[in-house]
Every structure is written in C-alpha cells, then in structure tokens.
Image 1 (cartoon, rainbow, N blue to C red):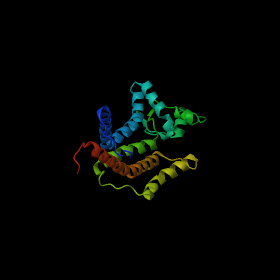
Image 2 (image 1 turned 180 degrees about the vertical axis):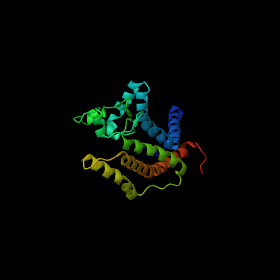
Image 3 (image 1 turned 120 degrees about the vertical axis):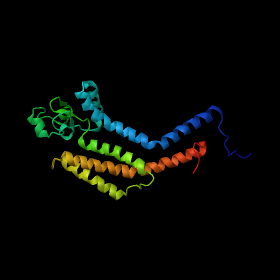
Image 4 (image 1 turned 90 degrees about the vertical axis):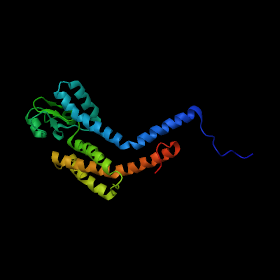
Length: 224
C-alpha cells in the first residue's frame, strides 16, 4: 500500500487561525518601515522627554526614564546635551569647578548626576547616541521616499563611514584625547546613515518577498 503524499486542506477553526496569522504577517510586512520608524522614534524621544519632565514638575517620571536608559548608555554629563539651562553642553572641568561633581567621582557617580535647575537637565542618552538614533529616524523617513530606488551600501563604504566613530570613541576610551560634542554628533550621524543605507534596502527586499509569499496563499491584493 503506497503512502499518501498529498495533505488534506485545512478546514474549520484551523484554517481560520492560519488565515488570520497570514493577514497579520502581511500587514506587518507591508508596514515594516513605519513600525521601525515609530519604534526608533519613541526610543530617541523618551530621553529628550526626561529633562522636559524634570524641569516641568514631574521629576519621578523623568528619573524613571534615566534609570530605564542606563543599561544602554553611560549618560556621562560631560558627554550629554543639557536642556533648560544657559548652555547646551558642559565640560568635566566646568562641572567640577561649579561644585556639581567631584574630581573623585567615577563614572557611576557622574552617570547619576541629572542636572540642576541652574544649569538644566541632561538628555538621558549621550551626544553620540542622540545623533545616531536621531539620524536613523530621519534617514528612515527619507528611505520611505526612495525605498524602491536605493541600493544597499557596499560593505567597504559602510566600514569607511563607521571608521570615524571607531577612531573617535577608541582614542577617547583609552584617554589619548578628549572628544567634543561636534565630533560625537558627526560620527554618530555617519554611523546612523551607514546603518540605514546598508540594512534598510535588504529589509525592504526581504519583507517584499514575505508579502508576496503570503499573498499567494491568501490573495489579499491583486498580483502585479
């Protein structure tokens, strides 16, 4: 007796579950860019909201945002942007000279310094991260206009765009030199551009393929 190779079509509730999942997968595949932009946008907006809340009379919520982002960023005040104060940035010497932090304070103590009403409050991610994620949001919006025409970045160009951040961050880490906010913004922005330009065209192609596969099963839109 030969084995039956064909499978019986799904019916009843199993078929409805599969069709529902396919419809959701299709919607996600079609709107992946909007979802990515929304997620990264929220991620970069919350740290900016933290000093707004601190200055606006909701310090508990603001402090919670700082705590939430500590695992992902050092939050050192001398490498952060400050809002609601006379200056956007402060050097370590300026903060020590004003008596706001001590020369003996390590990274952990400086990380916990959020700011004061006199100098303002720091954004909950550092200057480089702010530029990095901000540029990913901006380039993600631009990608929506050119998504069918933009080819993925060549790997050697991707590496070249990452090189300035690698050099700037490494030489600062080993204390050969101290970077500044301009370099952190430039190198963070270059890295964000490189990531979007390399990854988003590949993601667009992958989600397009997924959408076509689901459409063949469910026929949610006319095939071109």
